[in-house]
Length: 67
Ligand SMILES: [Zn+2]
Image (cartoon, rainbow, N blue to C red; front, side):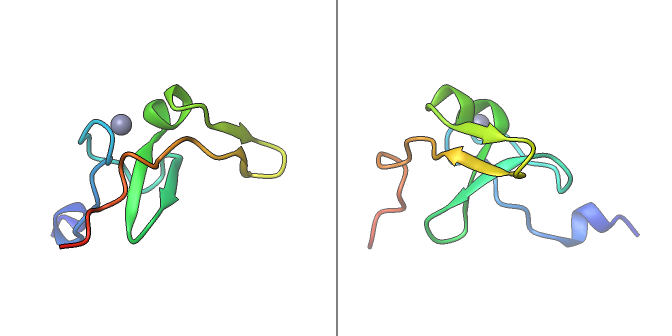
């Protein structure tokens, strides 16, 4: 059994890359994720000591459209 194949992982909303369970990412909106690289490129700043984002990356252009 491949656990990774059993779970539906949300791809990065910025570049579409698969985000591994154990890699840092930025969660926003409704079940959306930005990969580490995209979050930093979008102005995000991660505080490793606090283990949280001190500055949120810009995601206003990525919010899922209401249909
Ligand atoms: Zn990305």
